Length: 307
Image 1 (spheres, rainbow, N blue to C red):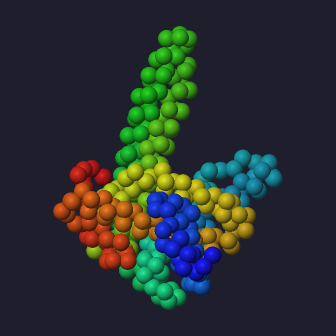
Image 2: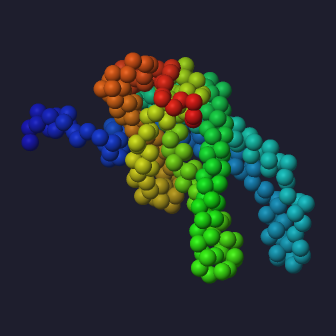
């Protein structure tokens, strides 16, 4: 096959949302430029691991082991509750900032062909305010939607329990069915909403002028009709995740690879949304793909009052 024929095949690649295509693009962007993304992942891993180790009550579990060996009853009063909750709060403050700083480097990686500079990761910490805003705003809505899913699950459970009671005349089914249907409802809604908001952070790092509340609306607009495919994209890395779990250092390469693939998918969603707006002849601000210009500061949606 000639070189021209090969180029023609690449240019006429089947359009659509395909995990294989985004993973291929991720490897293309990282080719010859793995060093800095791996070092950044190492820095993030060290920071988060330190916080987790700080929160873990080592001395308490040491006392548990000691009590089991010596045959006496352990005391819960030795659990370091104050340190534990303070450290958990620190984790919920520091981890979103570190994550947004890492994500900040991927638009730069995709824009430029030169090796990524570690200083770009440091620059990303300037977005600490929006990092915390996106995390807590998203967390709030996930909790609210999760509670709604839990309520829906309970209502569905009551219906099933009523049918079971009519058949068996036993009320014990309620105690079994309600927790199951409640947690199923909670889990389903939480997963759907998590993927609906999954590109909000990318919207922030693509254009730092985007407001926190707007980032969730942007994510909601872009992921409409693609949540299942985004889930499948994550699922396509399961083999690598198992391997990286066996050889933990493999996460240093897996994280840049996976995030690059997700960012490539985000760019596809941007372009797809732009095309749909053009076809519908909608006259309003719209997202712009990174190849053209940064994301618009506003994305209006027909149901923008509901996150």
